[in-house]
Image 1 (cartoon, rainbow, N blue to C red):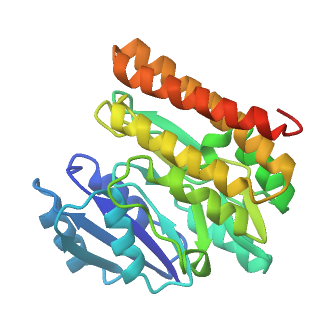
Image 2: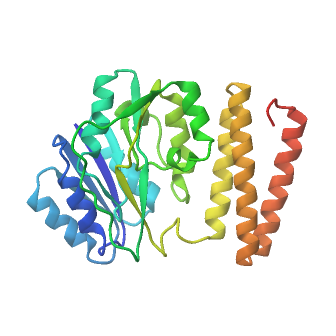
Length: 295
């Protein structure tokens, strides 16, 4: 069985699209865990109504604790052999989970499957999520290729949680950091690195909605600083691995820190930009002393 965890907070405009796309899945052996994170709009009542219509829907109401806390709550409640996350303002193709779980059923050593995603802007018509007929194509990535993909041009696909299906064991000792923004940046790389093999779908199966007031839609100082803290943790993590892996991580991480510096300057957050610049200089000083091959 697959457990799909959906954190919910102030998304009554989008929630039905999300839930209906999950109910329409061709993979039927699933539980949909709707975690109402203290939403103060119509979402709690909508969740209860969904639960009354379909027995596969499990509704949890809790005090607001943020996205990480909501996902962790869902993980504690999940009973499936497979775990997936969906953001409540997004939606998925009907064959998404059947195709991705199929990869793991065909390949016992694959611990998680990743798919490309399509961005949908809030002021545009929703993309057509009708699945193409026929078996979805995929390839199997060995460990070295997984690490390379994590730090190449399309690295964003390997950071987020919602374009993936995991074997349950990948979350046995891992939870999201409560109170942090960019919580995926703190966690997903650990599941990728620890996976024996990773399946990669060839076509987009997930639709990510870009909203003006979403976490990823605006630049905020706390989000930038949390992201940089996650990058520092990631560099420490990869420092324990192969030198080339660490080099790839450092190169991408420093580039991303520079990005945050320029975004802070552009937004007029001069004090934050100054703080980021100081962190970058300290990082660069330490890395130069290490004399890592490839940097």
